[in-house]
Image (cartoon, rainbow, N blue to C red; front, side, top):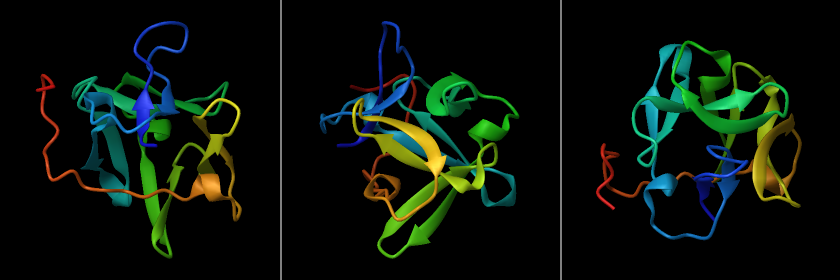
Length: 132
């Protein structure tokens, strides 16, 4: 189940896991930033929207790109998997999955399966406007 975003409704632009559909909301671009961080953007939302952490829910959602610590993602390898953190949450808060909603959120890092991510290249560049 790739990470996708809600399109409309009360959860508009919030991240979620969804069935693999090869849609533009599941095509992510990792833009290298300073100090080894990355900005995450989707083909669906375009280059002006970045994955940010909502400070009241600790959940990621797409927002206007800016110089915001919730948009600076760090990726570290853990065996064959990746662990994602943000400058906002710090090294001890990892992107995890709420099993009830299938929505990611920052939680204290631990040896939890929801905190281990696979990053897979599609072999395609993220473009705007979406081609699909």
